[in-house]
Length: 102
Image (cartoon, rainbow, N blue to C red):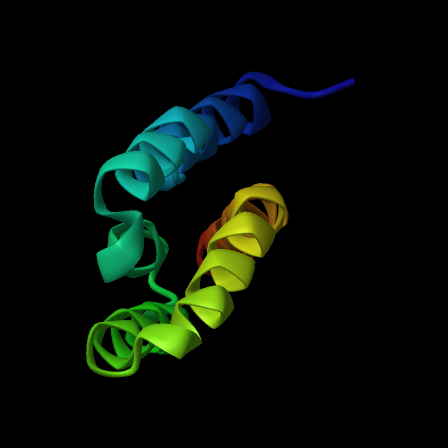
């Protein structure tokens, strides 16, 4: 059975996790509003995906035939974002557990 200190430590870790985890709704809203600019990727800390989004956007503006790539990237991002948010949140949880000593 857990003692009061363990319960308190778990509560503190849960509070820290809830303050730092990435919100799925915010991620999708950023994707809907700033998706072409990679806003949701930058929010998740996935700067390489954000750079690819920006690169595809500017490439599609210069070479319109490449806009097909932008559409494919965007449609795949709708599904892939869900998994990335869960992965980022799992990494945050693991990091907090290491810092907290569990």
